[in-house]
Image 1 (tube, rainbow, N blue to C red):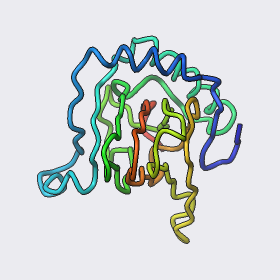
Image 2: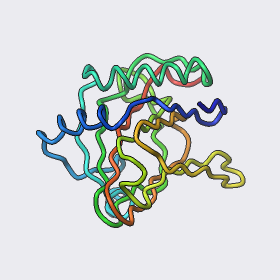
Image 3: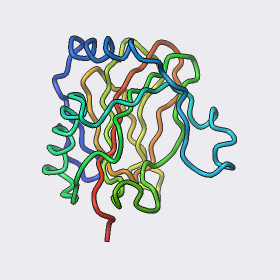
Image 4: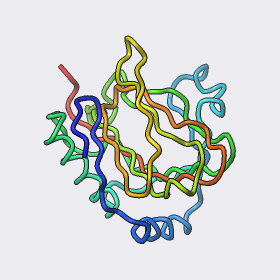
Length: 191
């Protein structure tokens, strides 16, 4: 596991058998086209910023409990944020066509939006083996002044936790299918 101040990686030991259980459960629900929060002007060209399919998983589902454990491990080991709960449901995300991506963005909001809380930690947990997709790397900007990036070709079970204020993206898929779970843990506004 990596214990850097800008992000935290965990080899969760979740293997394809666990990922398959999650994917089987998701096969019974329709996937929606992902959207982007913001005003109408920001949403006018959504497909160029974000092209993926999603389904929301309730924050009391067993998957959310498993992910909360990893968030807490990262927070204790690295971030030490004041955290309370998931800011909303867990996102099951599928990138399964050439060009599917999520452009540069941050997950934090300017003002509290969920019970007066703000997103503080973001998590991406990959359910696909790295051999199942080309492209689709997760990139984090760890130094805004010099636009220093870290790029991750995630494998099944890899989890990356990072501050929700950190710019990041999922590079375009060039072949195959990348599936992940994404969640945002929230706490009182930063002071």
